[in-house]
Image (cartoon, rainbow, N blue to C red; front, side, top):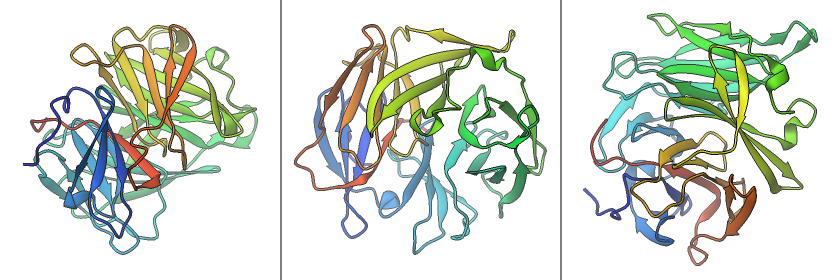
Length: 316
């Protein structure tokens, strides 16, 4: 087991990759503003699909279709079926810890009018693939997925036309989408300026949140947060995460939340990185203020890819 900083397991680390030709990764500890270089072979030249419950979903690269779950602390691996190199994915979710029988790994490709999905359970020998049509009846127009998240082990998909679908899976990982019919008048404005207003779904403290970012000319301008009232089927804007913090990676597929009680990190903050940008943005929901910093400025790394991961010292 490699030596990790004391704070690991309490809050996420921002990971920078040193490029496919170099070994090692740099882990940025935001509580101490320090960098730690490590060499986790399972991460070398790979893509992180997502991080949940202390596990990473590792996808193949340009020369390998290998796919597996990895605990970065114990380096324990759980092999998954090979992921075909011609399958393009935009998002990935792990529904629950891998030791639970209901655990599902899902890769998704959000296309215009269609949703391509590959899903499996740990131990399966092949992926179950489906192509699902996304269509908005009110506008009679093709729809497109914008975000995927997990709440209480259930998977949800949000679309450009503000449909929130619950993903129902049968025993063979076949998928049915159920529209929750959330009142879209309570949603933030995303449709007209969708390309500048990415939205992310994340679970924290039993609440299901959507984080709505406004980006202008490649710069983060503002962030708003909404929680879903499952009974009333409405989005409610909130301005206080209390002791919680949210972390969003540059790919958009990495969205984590955790408590800041046992760390030096202040709560009610959102930490975000953007594609091909070395800047770490820190948004204070109390003050509606934005701070920026440059983590690990002297580290030579592939700045195009950086991800948040939340390692755990015990397999969960």
